[in-house]
Image 1 (cartoon, rainbow, N blue to C red):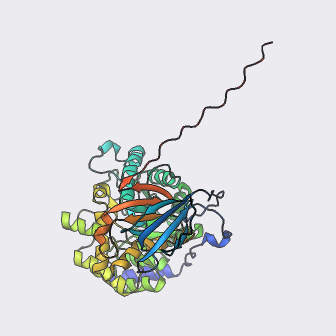
Image 2 (image 1 turned 135 degrees about the vertical axis):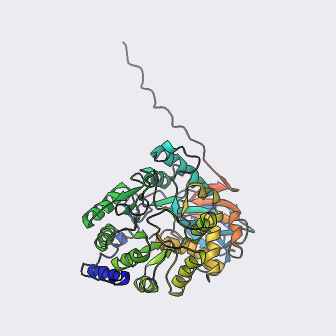
Image 3 (image 1 turned 90 degrees about the horizontal axis):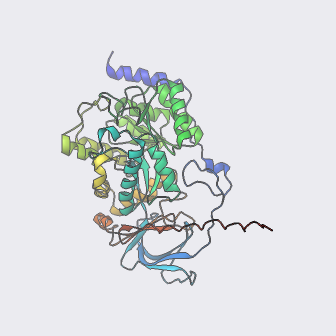
Length: 463
């Protein structure tokens, strides 16, 4: 029996099973105006005080993320929300507002990186600390500072060490550390010996970084466990069976979470058939699979530059049982171009890991340049890095554009990134959740305000 015929039989067997549930939109059962956590899980929380002084950014060129155009406008922030985007001649803000003069600068939504690994070890990490949750959390906090300084207000973390991704996500959400928002998958789910678990076993290719599961029920349980730990997206990786991938997607969609896949060849085809939301990387797939992605609305995060780095450094993938294919720069770019031609929506991510965090923001700018090389205009690439990425996060109602009512995640750049992507290196200010976190390119940490001691009780009457 030929390999192609065997693949067709395998896929045909999968079609007999029930199709996974559609993604459950929790907003449909939450009353408009209800305050929730700022993530796809959308847990109702007590209303946040939206009073207080306004922050006004005036005089700048505004790229709002909704269109390719840049216009003169004023952005007014109150609390953690954008209150208004005003015409340049308007002075409709409070007398006590804090006014930022952005003359000669570009005001735009904060950047979003759709594929990072913030807690992975690097060359400076001792081997006995590579699987350490504490070491990973500290390393992740350092790496998040790099992102914040570079204009990122959100990142999607797609695998990390033990509980570190969840801790960093929670602390960032509480603004307890200077960091972008962290939307995390926590750990990849794969079959035994699948991606990130293959031999030789090492701290970064073992149970501290990935969940191995076998059988549909075990994959469903792994999704539930990941949701319980605090995931806001589910990441799976080849290899898997048709029943396993369908069970994982079904369970995630019932919980209201999207699923993305690090997979290739036949596994990409199986994931698309199972109802996957997104495919990572430019790994090999057939033209028929690309057509199916487009037909079913499956999105993509191509991460071209990280694979270019692998090719430039090593010439290709070697010694990996989850990368059993040939890879070339042209082949990767051809997959990208075919996806664009098919109309597949693509977001921007870097797959930054380990020592590659030192490349921030250069690796992200290089990724944007791949998009431009592949047919995007510069403004279209910027929209992919902001509004499109927010949609892929399932957060476009809160993030990705400068509009009244959205969360105040704002980047101010010295230059015109809509004309020259290299201007993104010239970060002036970053506002995340309405808080000024970067000023003149440096992280701002407000001083600790000590809490007064309890009032002493009056002395006892001794008479």
